[in-house]
Length: 449
Image (cartoon, rainbow, N blue to C red; front, side, top):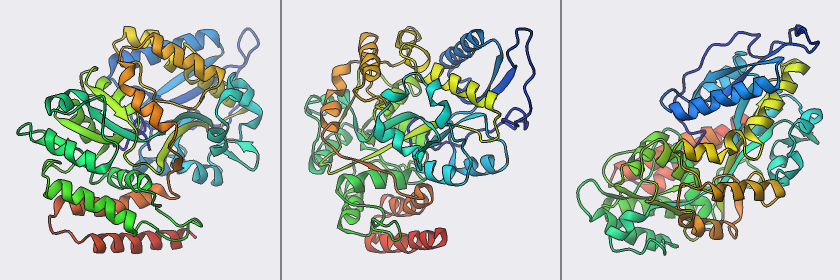
């Protein structure tokens, strides 16, 4: 799950069969090239006018460079909503170019809901610079089904200003959970409304963060064969016990239950929440969408990390698209999401628009020539203090990534109950919460076969 593919309920526009890639023949233009109309997901919301204008400018520039192609954008943010994603696919309402989170790659590919784009990968000019392990995630039986767009690892996001105010050194952030607890207590002691450590309790985000914390402690959600739950373990109990003690003994987590993705972002943006788990793009969202002060936020490695939850997303092509539509869709993906200095990598434009630039929020290109060029541009146009993210960069290089579990969304929903339990009930029975969740997850796995 991501950050940019967070779990907010999104509005879904009804699209005609033609708009979604109907397979109808294209009409020729006067110049001989066939007219093509495609729909593309993820136009920024009207509440982010500068980002929306940048998107619309890119659409116009793309259509000028491809005069036979008409691009229609879906006004939907965030791009992925687990409640509507499945029905939208099944109902034929999906765009020509759509986003799939890593948790859903296997299901979408297995169900034939993404086009085999192996013969079209040459449309992505830097395809060979994409990290092989990330490309492998969208590959099945030697065939490619998507273009990786985001890849990330989880760290600890923290408010450097609050660290200073609480007598903590922002340049030496916590590296252990004991240090996290101590820092959280000092920040909460700053006064009413201050929260040392923020955490989710529902909306699938609670289970998502449970998974992050469990991986960091060396645990697993499922057994290696994916047939049984594995989180009812010493590591799983340690996650919930730590949260329970921070909430009820330390009083460092506040009293408000945070359910959806946006709620914790708002809390961080308010400047009164000290720490949370998250990928680097949390900093981007807190600053860009939720009015956080750009100088206040840093990110460091996951405490005591034995592994770090990795996630991301890819763009895929509607299998109902005609060959012409599929090619145009890939060209759009290349232009907007994979060209150095253009589209999402136009850091100069982002800086001019007042966007937060400088966070190391995407590793799809790794240390390849394209990756190095992107990083150089990011640093050159940085509007954020890049030194604030050095602890994360250094730590993440040594922490093994671990993918989200199979059937992640269903499992996260079940684990929400355990997270909500310890954060809402001082007398919560941790053993029972984990046992109940284990029973329910095993039932899901058995039903899935």
